[in-house]
Length: 227
Ligand SMILES: C[S@@+](CC[C@H](N)C(=O)[O-])C[C@H]1O[C@@H](n2cnc3c(N)ncnc32)[C@H](O)[C@@H]1O
Image 1 (cartoon, rainbow, N blue to C red):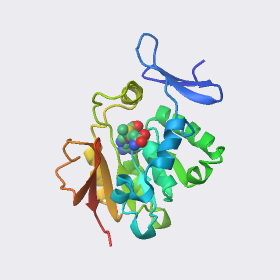
Image 2 (cartoon, rainbow, N blue to C red):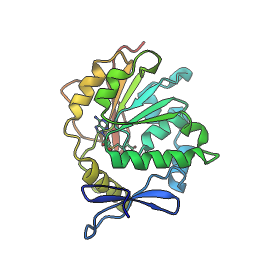
Image 3 (tube, helix red, strand yellow):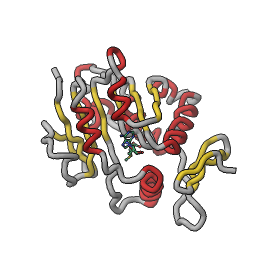
């Protein structure tokens, strides 16, 4: 029996974890959030620490560990890496089904010795980050806002392709992502980081102050009230 369903996708519990199953007849595989899987753990161990592009984009030099809002949390990989780098992270995801998968993955990460410390730095909210942003004040206000809205997938490995296609089918196209950037820009945060596919245009007409590039992605950095 499905616990929940959205766009005919079903959330099922299997072997102690939640899985999101596509409707019958759709050629997609079920997905789940598994921070304890070998490939993600390898990425955590071998990612390059604070020298990696994501850390440089976030401004984690000289030991800084800002409070980061991951405002488009999705399956939580980027947010988890940010927490593993030592930052407290507020994740916000508006799709109830994706939020449920992520909450389940974080719950299991808290039970894993290698992941528990990073998982303990993460708070997860369900809802629209544009609304959450107006409520995060005082000690709760993020110094860095990280945005990774959906972008049409290109040719990638079968696994990524499947995950991205399920994510897109469930969460939609994020066609309102410039509004998210505008909402972030209205806050007193120090910097905003937007993840884009390599070669894609910036998220809006706002010009980033600089970009950190990787072969597949680009982090556009908007210095806001950065010191
Ligand atoms: C490309 S995915 C993010 C992937 C994520 N960075 C990761 O590492 O797994 C984008 C996600 O952002 C969510 N999203 C987009 N706009 C949002 C908003 N305004 N508030 C909350 N979530 C949002 C979408 O529902 C989708 O799940």
